[in-house]
Length: 219
Image 1 (tube, helix red, strand yellow):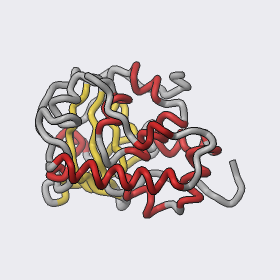
Image 2 (cartoon, helix red, strand yellow):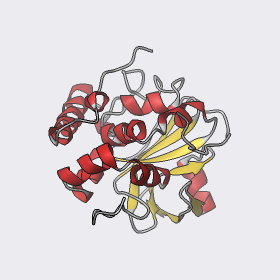
Image 3 (cartoon, rainbow, N blue to C red):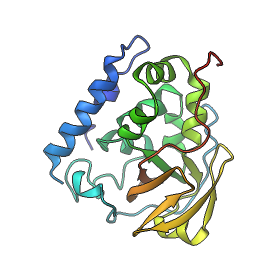
């Protein structure tokens, strides 16, 4: 599959705060147009992913079926490349590259990714904080992203059956049903669940999980 260029792909160490505006512009335009180094990632094996449908209120705004970025087209993509094609995950994808987690996401054979939307990031952090996190705070960024990853490939139904999951950052999250979706502790809900990619399961969520980085001058 030919890679789709994203606003996040242009991220460099010298990026200005305008990066965030570009990410948001891309996410909005993509939704409208669609109509519808391992660095210690510690990711492990899991069941083989297969094509399928996604579910959730946000799914109607995202590419569908065999459209570029649709669930069926992502089924053979490794996790790191699949994230590049989902238009509302540009900040999460940029963070995975900036923190050095993309190699681990490519090589793993089983991880569940609870990926916050761009909106979740920009409503939690200021532009300056996001720039600081993406450019200078690799350790904190990696820890934040690992708080959104679970060992093994878990569907929405499996997470609900489990009732509780532990992230790669060591956080325990209670999973409860909420209107056909899942509530993750008291921090977020799934909004488009069950992207099945070659080596992972991706669920889009509307908030950030785990302990948020401090911006009081600590590393």
